Every structure is written in C-alpha cells, then in structure tokens.
Length: 561
Image 1 (cartoon, helix red, strand yellow):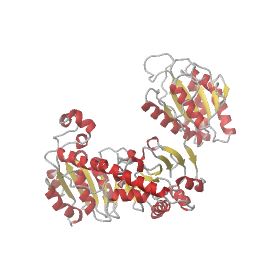
Image 2 (cartoon, rainbow, N blue to C red):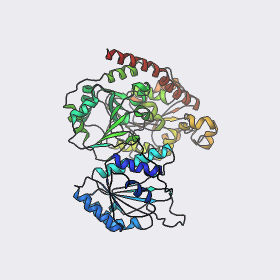
Image 3 (cartoon, rainbow, N blue to C red):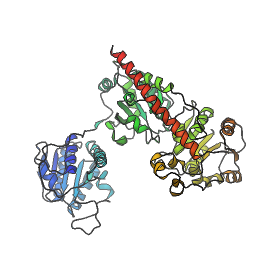
Image 4 (cartoon, rainbow, N blue to C red):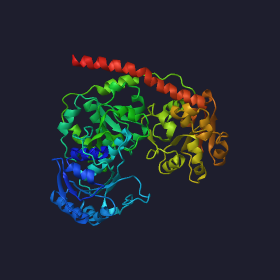
C-alpha cells in the first residue's frame, strides 16, 4: 500500500516513470510518508543511513560507481537534517554526479515561528545545478506545475549534469490505503547526437507533424535550407511567427493556423527557438507531442508538451533527419496551406490589424522591423516581404525598451529599421528619441489609441468592467495630445493620420519615401475600432474551422481508399 497523500503519490510515480530506483533514506517524520511508501514498492532499492552527512556521501559513491548517469535519491526530514547534505552535494557538484536531494516540509512558509521550520529558498551555488519547490497538489493547475517542475529536475538528473534539490510539502495524514500510483505521468525521452534517425522517421512518416519555431536568432543559410528540405521531404508545415526570422520553405504563420479546425492540428511538432510572443500558438500545439531540439543543451518544456528532448545542435538534427528514407510523405502541409490561403480577410476599420496589413504590404525588402505587444498580434496574420527580418522583445513579452532596441539595431546596420508599437510602449521609452545617435534610418509607426487598448480588447477584462477599465487599469488619457511636439523637437519628420483614408494615403510614403531625418508616423485609432478589428480577425477563425475540418476529413477518407 501507498500513502493517501496525492502529492507524494505523484512524486513517486514520476520517479518510477524515469526509472529512478536507488534511494538512500534517513529516518524522520516529514519524509515518513515517502519512506514508508517506496519501501512497500519492489521497484525501488532502498538503503537506510541514519546520519544525513553519511547518507549523502553514500549516494555520491553509488552515483559514481553507476557511471554518473544513474540518479540516486537522498531523502531526509526537516529542521537541520538537510544542512548535513552540503559537503557531499558540493562534491557531487564538482564531479557532475546526479544525486537528487529530496527534502520535505510540512507547510509552505518558514516564517511562522513553527517548530522545525527552516528557509531552504537560497543555498550555495555549488551544491546543486537546479532546485525546485514543488506545490502541494490540490487542483489540476497544481498538478500541472508539479509535473512540469519534476520533469525539469529529473531530466537534469538523468542527463548527469549534477546534483538536484527537490523540496516537497507533505501532509500529516499517516494513512496507507492507496493501491495504485497515478497513471497520468510519463517520461520525457532524452537523446544525444547519436539518435536513431530511421526510427524517428518512421514515427513521422505520413503523420500530421510539423516544425515549430519560437523567436530565433537570424538563421544561417545552411540551417534554414536544412529545415526547409526537411519540411519538404516529410511534407509538413513550419509553424512560426515573424520573430522566428524563418524565410524558408513550407512556412505557415501560427496566427493563421488558428483558423484551422482542431482535427487538422498537428500531432507531433519538432520544437526549436525561444519564447514566442504569439498568444495563439498554444492553441496550435495544445494536443501535440513536442520534440524539443536544444542547440545549447538546456532542457525546456514548452507549455508542458515536450515528449522527446534532443541535446544536439539544430543543424545536426535536421541534417541527420534529411539523410533517411521516408516511407510515406505526408500531405499535411499542402492541406494546411490550402485551408489558410482560402481565407479572405474582410474590410477592416482603422485598427492595429488594418495597419499591420498595409505595413506588411509596403515594407521594403532588406529592412528590419521590431514589433511590440498588440501590434505583434496583428502583424502575425500577414506575410512580410521576402528579406525582411523581424524581431521583438519576447524574452519577457513586456512593453518597455522597444524604441531603444530599435536605436541599437539602427546603429549597427545600414538598413531601414522600423518600429511598430502602441502608445503606452512608445511613451514609456520616448526619451531615447533625443539621443544624439538617432539616425535617419529609423522609422516609427506609433498606434495611439490613448490607452492600453490591450485591456479593452480582452473580454476577460473588458466585459465585467467596460469603460471603467480606462480609469482603473489601462492608463487612458495620458497621451491624448500625441507625440508631435516631442518628435519634432527631437528632429523627426512627423506624419499623422486620424482616418482610414489618411492612413492609406501615407503608408507607402512612410515605408518607401526618401527622408533626410528619422520618421515618426502617428496613427490615431479608437477603442471601438480596435475592438472591431480584433473581433473581425477572430471571426475568421470561427467561420473557417468548420470548413477546414470538412475539407480535411474528405481528404483523409480519399487517402484511405
């Protein structure tokens, strides 16, 4: 029998999923439920060592003898017991040995003057390569976070990167009536450069799979060619947004992919790149199994969907996959491409989506553009001209520093450097306009809706509060006068538009005209038009999902015949 504590049950289930069986246990109450449960399970090899300092060194010896890739768990109670682990964990750190220090506590705080309550939130840098504080599992969200943290900790350990600290909360219910561990856990398979490409190709052959690219540094011509060749060889799409900087074959923008029915979503996605600022992306891969390829060796688990992790350069992965024979080329890309291309975008009001539509149309090739927040959402619906590089501050997806980032870009390249942003982001960073290094290759398209319209187009915020959002949340009214005075005083050529016709008559000149100064084009929009613009784009998703589903089902039935 196991204990009845759900948190401990999931902890044990995850250890079993990863094949971690060696446990050196010291006696105690706070780790009592865990100790009693694992010793009732024949899967685990448990060893009892009373002194925690000796227990930790025992684990060091075991981990070394097992080859440095087989984790060994040490576990102890609260109070100062875990402090005795430090010498051995230091040894493990410098020898890169996978010792898992599993400590327990009976509550989430340490400042309530409770007995045996210590602060483990900070420890020396050289006693662990990763530490996690697991939540007590009460809700599904708790479980999701718990499992995500356990994947990170256990993947670090099984890869032999060094010691790991896991801190777990347990209840004081010493009842043991549970016969089975949870079944909804799994192991993320880890591969190095010597993976079996033929076996992987068999999984991808004919499947609804694809490549997913988050924000990415500018691709080398060779890597972009390899990705495109892979997509073409297997017949799959390459999903990305503009921050991916991918200009190769089979490209599908994630924002457009949300127009497809759920049944036409990918089942497997090869995941590269960093954070993506396109908020529609999770809907795309919500049911997909992700194969993460990490060029820097760092394990990440995008939204908890990773099933395979490849610790190898991206170029090597695609090179090896391109060398194998594909039994059956998928028609998934051609079907997705057909569905996406058939969507007709209706007339839009003067709003971020319309501005993005025409900005994408007139941007000159061989230029670069930096995009922020709500503006990024609109631009991701539209293909940019070939040769345009795009980027965004998506590491944290905040609004600060966009204009300064563009200045930095402009200083080291002779291309036109565009910045497309809203009024809060602009006025937050407008002091940089007075910098003496601002050159004439900077062009700023400022959408001024006189508030943080992001909150007004979000029904979760806008529906319950309505116009109160303007006062309570979105900082309305601060920038009604616009940027004209500041821009002109800083030597910018200033342009403005308050109607759709005014905007359309100037956008081509803004993008392609010859100017002797940096340019700021301020477009004034209303909250109502911004809401209508977003709702129009979202309505395309609802209208086309059913159509794309029927088309895909017909195609699949035809293939079966």
